[in-house]
Image 1 (cartoon, rainbow, N blue to C red):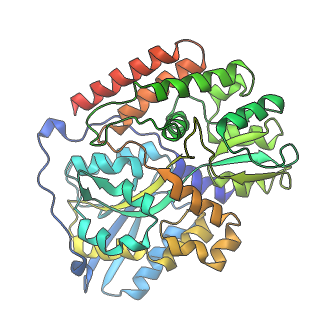
Image 2 (image 1 turned 135 degrees about the horizontal axis):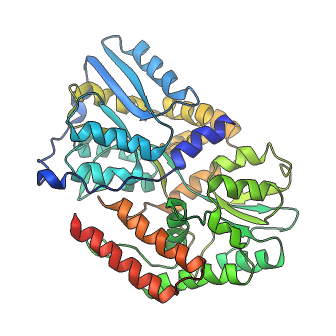
Length: 420
């Protein structure tokens, strides 16, 4: 399997296991705060726990760090490729207050959960010191209840892929995409009952001006006219043939294969599909564009990626901070893009000649990340996502109405919030 596919699918997979923090043990203890100066002169050993290093980029970063810091040595502990198994293994260690993992590679949707459970150091002063270096949208993924709990390590945002031999230029709205798709060979996206469907729904909802949660994250707000409009739009797309019914079985890879096989004019997918598409039979017949608007709103994406948190149970938080800061330097971020195709969180990296050579669409990717928004930031995001994709899936399959789905979705999210 292509290294592009292996590396990015691992990052983009967003399936989580249900958990609500450490409710059984009562309120989480007050988080300790790390200061930037604590990383200076740190020594000892640190362990970085993150998904499998399929490209070799993680090990390369560890080796470079160790060469530059003889008194502070890092070690990579590889977790499974599957995001849900990564989370499961991290959570098992954190609940046991194990010091085995110092630096945690966390899917962006886990950050609030870990923070709420008392499993992370507060990195607010550290992140504030680096704030100008990061793409602003990526910083929103590390925030929870007014504090910043991690450094953004890599990011992601989706694109519209389109056949240049069928469409002269990308449509400027989702409505136009669906109209054109109906006349041509259709649109494919991630419509299976899983996180990918949540992302597709949220992208349209955000563009329409709707939201899943209130600004403080304490109330469900998806029972709205905007949500109903999105659900009706998605359902109509399948009913009138703009979207094939098989889309309800599609994840990232099945969408990509359908597009590359010439079975679709448009595709919503992540950046990893670009490099693979250029190795396919349609290599010269497609291009990409950032998301257009919907229902009169601006285009909006949903951020993916991983953050770097410091375990509250680390035996070497100072050294862990030094290593985490090293991983977000431009030098390392550039290597992650070139070697592992992991989109950088550091803005300056997108101007690097090597990065632009490795990613011909680097400028478009930066724009896509800038326009994207975090998925709902909540310790119970896993349950929120399930409420969304379960109900959207039922609408796509014609088993429930948009009105009923919006109401049920809202109730299920409220129940999840109440249990936390």
